Structure formats: structure tokens, C-alpha cells
Length: 219
Image (cartoon, rainbow, N blue to C red; front, side, top):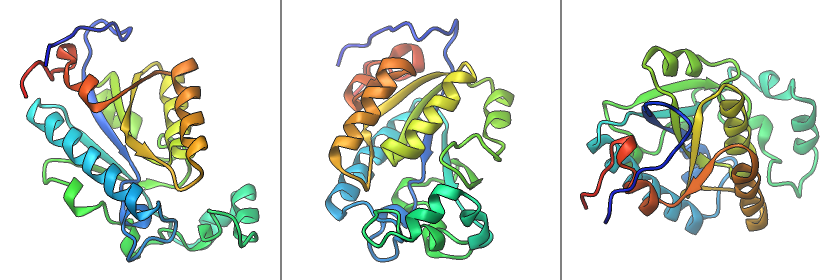
């Protein structure tokens, strides 16, 4: 694998992996309240593990964002979400009982978390910056380049990439490592929106070549 250099628009890139909702509430079919299809979950877990292992080996931190609510009223305060709960055919019909505090769904998938990883578990909306200390943590550590993974491509990933872009972060979405519980065309549409206006989409193999981020040519 040949190391490559790429202009991400920052003078000296310093990267972190931002793993959005790689928790049991989406990815563990035994407990998930808003599940990704089982075969899709298996693939996205494997891709995330591969990327995270390479990132840790390169000294790039992994930060897990986890949705957690104190009670259903915190969810129900969102007008649109309330209507999803009233539609039995909607993929988000379980939204009012999704990742309430104490539920097993609030746990990062165990194969994706290592002791040195960081966790922000106060996420309550699609945008991972809203109501969390994510921005403070990133800036405190000089991180200016985000490698985004997780679920769902067309909601939390898209909203967080947009929020990161307007905060002037360089954003790369690891296309192998994001997925959706919605239709495949919405996954594709989310990636198209991102690479059109907000950041880069790259496969794991492409990311592994990025020497400016610390990956290099090994492996």
C-alpha cells in the first residue's frame, strides 16, 4: 500500500475517529430498539473495528458518541420524532423508547471499544455537537480533522458532518464504516450530499494510505 498525501484544507492535520452511535441500540439485534439489518450491522461493525484498530496503532484517538436520554420526554420534545412514533410502519417508530438511561442499547458495541477510547454519552439529537462537550474536547486536544463513522448515514452522520463543517473542521466520512436502518438509497444520498458540500468520503483502504493523518504505508 502506497502512502499518499492529500490536501484537507488544514495546515497541520491532527485527526480523531468520531464513531457515531456504534451502540447496541442500533447494532445488537438482541436488544436494539432502532436496529440496522443484522447483516448490515455485522459488516459495519467489522469495518469499524478494522479502522479503529489501525487508528489506535497510528496514535489517532477514537471518540464514541452515544445517544442517551433521561426519559421519553427528552425525546418527545422533538416535534417530528413524536410523529414518527405514531406511524407503525416507520423505521423510527420506536423512537420514544430508544436508548433511555439504563437500557442495554446505551452501551458501545464491546468489540469496538478499548480502554483508551473516549466516550461522549450525552448525545440527544442527530447533531453530535448539540448539547455535548464534543467541540470542547476536540479543540482542547488540537484536533482539526474528523474521520466520521457510524449510524445512520442519512441522519446522525449527515447532521454531524454538516455541524463539523460549519465549525471549520476538515471532515472525512469512512464510507465502509457508515450505514443506515433506512433504505439503501438514503445511505447513498447521504454520502452524495456529504461529498458535494461538506467533506470527503473515502474507503478504509484509501484512509489507510493517508500519511498526513499518521497512517502511512504499513499493512
